[in-house]
Figure 1 (tube, protein in one colour):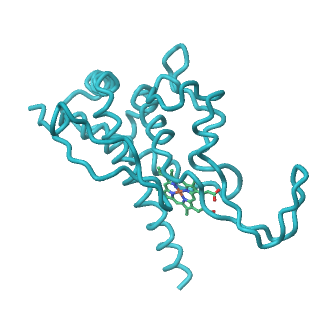
Figure 2 (spheres, protein in one colour):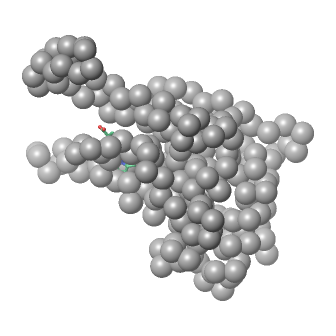
Figure 3 (cartoon, helix red, strand yellow):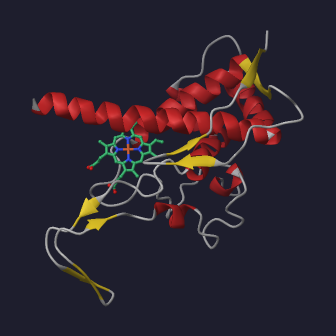
Length: 206
Ligand code: HEM
């Protein structure tokens, strides 16, 4: 039973979140053709068309990696993290948090903090690149939370996002169904933060 529960936890924590991030990613690329085109150029230069992208390409593709980190930041899939509770009374900055109180983390306030991410509403992957255009990991990046109970699926999620988005873009152009009307960037906030359902055209590059 323990094993079944653990597998169930991994599946439920891992599928909805990553699917949601991929759906946001396609939507952001639809709204930002310049970003999409720069990513396509990198895919063509590093991978070409004769084979699919693999995880070995990740390191040589800093722009695509930066796009994925920016997708994860803007998607804000779990803006309140996962609820925790105190197992003893805790004093923190003059507040008493009683034993048993439910604690929600405001990860959103970190991911959208204008001091760390200037113009936070903007979809801008270059905020995760340094001057040499090599990947730069942002120290306060908190989409997967922090500390001992932080998301254990971060690497898997990054791998999946990398493979899905680069492979789709290698084979297809992502264009709006109606060029005069882009689907809304406004999400729906529940346990996770999801985009509204939208249609998109994938045009084969062959
Ligand atoms: C973009 C994708 C994902 C995001 C944004 C995300 C985000 C998070 C966040 C914010 C937490 C809460 C951490 C805390 O309590 O402080 C969490 C926990 C967790 N995540 Fe993810 N996650 C993602 C993908 C995945 C994947 C792919 C897996 C599984 C393979 C996974 C498995 C888990 C598990 C098991 C926990 C609970 C960890 C614990 O309580 O010790 N997540 N995730």
